[in-house]
Image (cartoon, rainbow, N blue to C red; front, side, top):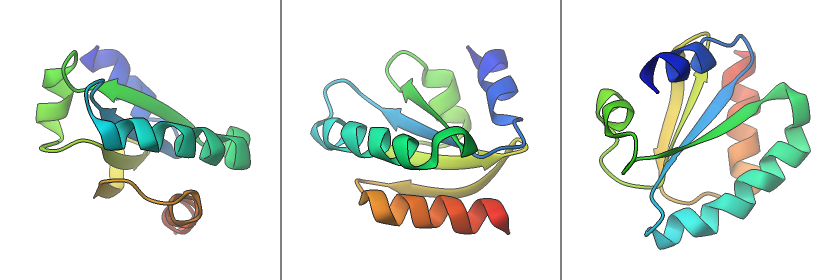
Length: 101
Protein backbone atom coordinates (compact mmCIF):
# COMPACT_ATOMS: atom_id res chain seq x y z
CA UNK A 1 0.00 0.00 0.00
CA UNK A 2 2.75 2.44 0.97
CA UNK A 3 4.58 2.33 -2.39
CA UNK A 4 1.40 2.69 -4.45
CA UNK A 5 0.29 5.56 -2.18
CA UNK A 6 3.62 7.30 -2.71
CA UNK A 7 3.26 6.88 -6.49
CA UNK A 8 -0.25 8.37 -6.43
CA UNK A 9 0.76 11.50 -4.50
CA UNK A 10 3.68 12.18 -6.89
CA UNK A 11 1.12 13.35 -9.46
CA UNK A 12 1.58 16.84 -10.87
CA UNK A 13 -2.14 17.37 -10.48
CA UNK A 14 -3.48 17.84 -6.94
CA UNK A 15 -4.38 14.71 -4.98
CA UNK A 16 -6.76 15.11 -2.04
CA UNK A 17 -6.38 12.25 0.42
CA UNK A 18 -9.28 11.61 2.78
CA UNK A 19 -8.10 9.68 5.83
CA UNK A 20 -11.24 8.10 7.27
CA UNK A 21 -12.60 5.25 9.37
CA UNK A 22 -15.74 3.23 8.72
CA UNK A 23 -16.99 3.83 12.29
CA UNK A 24 -16.54 7.62 12.07
CA UNK A 25 -19.77 9.66 11.77
CA UNK A 26 -18.16 12.87 10.46
CA UNK A 27 -16.29 10.75 7.86
CA UNK A 28 -19.63 9.52 6.56
CA UNK A 29 -20.84 13.14 6.35
CA UNK A 30 -17.71 14.12 4.40
CA UNK A 31 -17.97 11.34 1.78
CA UNK A 32 -20.85 12.86 -0.28
CA UNK A 33 -19.23 16.31 -0.03
CA UNK A 34 -16.05 14.92 -1.58
CA UNK A 35 -18.09 13.30 -4.36
CA UNK A 36 -19.48 16.76 -5.16
CA UNK A 37 -15.97 18.27 -5.07
CA UNK A 38 -14.83 15.63 -7.59
CA UNK A 39 -17.90 16.29 -9.75
CA UNK A 40 -17.08 20.02 -9.73
CA UNK A 41 -13.35 19.75 -10.39
CA UNK A 42 -13.40 16.63 -12.55
CA UNK A 43 -10.03 15.71 -14.05
CA UNK A 44 -8.25 18.62 -12.36
CA UNK A 45 -8.00 16.59 -9.14
CA UNK A 46 -7.70 13.06 -7.81
CA UNK A 47 -9.45 12.17 -4.56
CA UNK A 48 -8.47 9.01 -2.75
CA UNK A 49 -9.77 7.57 0.50
CA UNK A 50 -7.48 5.88 3.01
CA UNK A 51 -9.04 3.75 5.75
CA UNK A 52 -6.82 4.46 8.76
CA UNK A 53 -7.70 1.13 10.38
CA UNK A 54 -6.49 -0.81 7.33
CA UNK A 55 -3.55 1.47 6.43
CA UNK A 56 -1.99 2.43 9.74
CA UNK A 57 1.49 2.87 8.24
CA UNK A 58 0.32 5.62 5.89
CA UNK A 59 -1.72 7.31 8.62
CA UNK A 60 1.28 7.19 10.96
CA UNK A 61 3.67 8.54 8.33
CA UNK A 62 1.49 11.63 7.90
CA UNK A 63 0.71 11.94 11.63
CA UNK A 64 -3.03 11.54 11.19
CA UNK A 65 -4.37 11.59 14.75
CA UNK A 66 -8.06 12.14 14.11
CA UNK A 67 -10.51 11.34 11.37
CA UNK A 68 -11.57 12.67 9.02
CA UNK A 69 -8.31 14.33 8.04
CA UNK A 70 -7.80 15.63 4.51
CA UNK A 71 -4.33 16.24 3.10
CA UNK A 72 -3.78 17.87 -0.28
CA UNK A 73 -0.67 16.67 -2.13
CA UNK A 74 0.94 17.82 -5.34
CA UNK A 75 4.21 16.44 -6.72
CA UNK A 76 4.54 14.37 -3.54
CA UNK A 77 4.44 17.37 -1.20
CA UNK A 78 1.65 18.08 1.29
CA UNK A 79 0.27 21.55 0.47
CA UNK A 80 -2.52 21.68 3.07
CA UNK A 81 -4.17 19.58 5.74
CA UNK A 82 -7.36 19.87 7.74
CA UNK A 83 -9.18 17.69 10.23
CA UNK A 84 -12.94 17.62 10.38
CA UNK A 85 -15.76 18.23 7.94
CA UNK A 86 -15.71 21.24 5.62
CA UNK A 87 -18.20 22.54 3.07
CA UNK A 88 -17.82 21.69 -0.60
CA UNK A 89 -17.19 25.37 -1.39
CA UNK A 90 -14.42 25.68 1.20
CA UNK A 91 -12.69 22.50 0.02
CA UNK A 92 -12.82 23.60 -3.63
CA UNK A 93 -11.48 27.05 -2.71
CA UNK A 94 -8.51 25.53 -0.85
CA UNK A 95 -7.72 23.11 -3.69
CA UNK A 96 -7.82 25.86 -6.33
CA UNK A 97 -5.75 28.31 -4.23
CA UNK A 98 -3.12 25.81 -3.08
CA UNK A 99 -2.64 23.97 -6.36
CA UNK A 100 -2.24 27.14 -8.42
CA UNK A 101 0.30 28.78 -6.15
